[in-house]
Amino acid sequence: MNDITSAELKERQANGTAPIIIDVRETWENEESRIDGSRNIPLGELPTKLEDLEDLKHQEIVVHCKGGGRSASAKAFLVQHGFDHVRNLIGGMQGYQQA
Image (cartoon, rainbow, N blue to C red; front, side):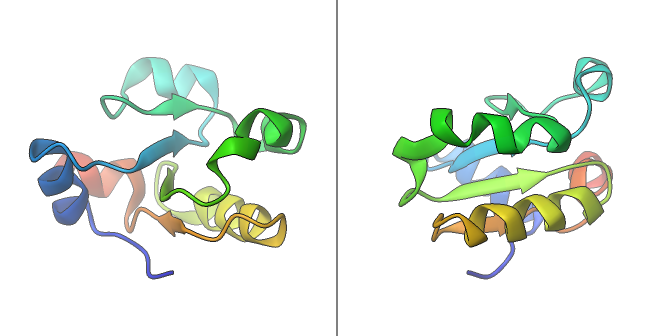
């Protein structure tokens, strides 16, 4: 599935059609700034949280980090484990704050 831009995500949030948003940054980063409605699961904890996410396998999920690197890894990991609608937020939190 194609990745998502900050502008598209903000538009979808504004019209009430936002996907599930998972922030894979560390907890302290999430505490400094966060996207409304996002769920914080640091990348290193993702393997242990797979069971908790099982019911989201066929829903649209957007993963993000600071700039896009960790979330690209998270996307690949989730897809590898059967999640079929995962998108990476292009530019990460930095891009989102500038959009």
